[in-house]
Image 1 (cartoon, each protein chain N blue to C red):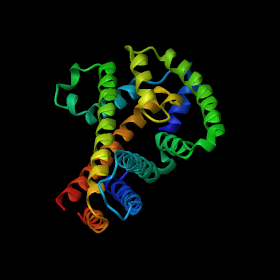
Image 2 (image 1 turned 90 degrees about the vertical axis):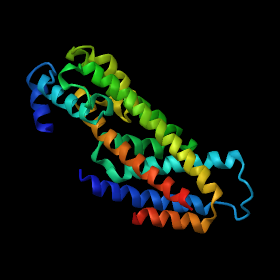
Image 3 (image 1 turned 180 degrees about the vertical axis):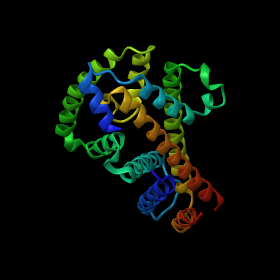
Image 4 (image 1 turned 60 degrees about the vertical axis):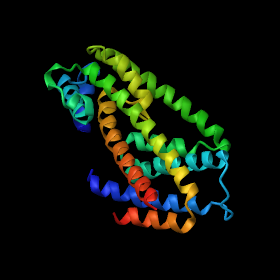
Length: 92
Length: 157
């Protein structure tokens, strides 16, 4: 992929191929929980980018929430149980 | 990228870090103050981000950017932050001129927003940005999965 890119950028005035963009955008679309269920041909690239931004923000928020919940949980249980929990989730 | 091996690499590192964080706890476990909880929350969050970035290593621009950010966030390295900012500025002006020439259906505005969300995004052209974003999302969901699992096992006790 990197060789394809450098070939193109040397060829014209840094024109990224439309097909490449479409391919990458559709790959992104597959990851988004909302758009995945809708009919694929109706979604524009800018909408996909927008949904991606929202999705990443919500993922960040979830990581924050989970980290906070974990910190509260681990504060309440004693050291041995914490070790046990960690080992158990490793085995799971 | 084999998801199962990324997952196991991340899990190992993260749980190792979590063990260290737990070891910091004071022996007298009277109800911990909000300051202590906040500190632990920060440590856990950093551990999660660090573990993920280290598991991906320098294979991806976003993980390199995350590792740089984590390494230079201490107050000593104000010089490093300044150096990074000027580096990013030169890269982003180059990338921005690429993006403007592209002129797709309003892709530039949303792409700018995305660039702020993905670590290292300011220096990427549109193609790279989309590619990195897909990988970044996959890793974020892995991270969440394992954090969630850890919470469940901790709750069961």
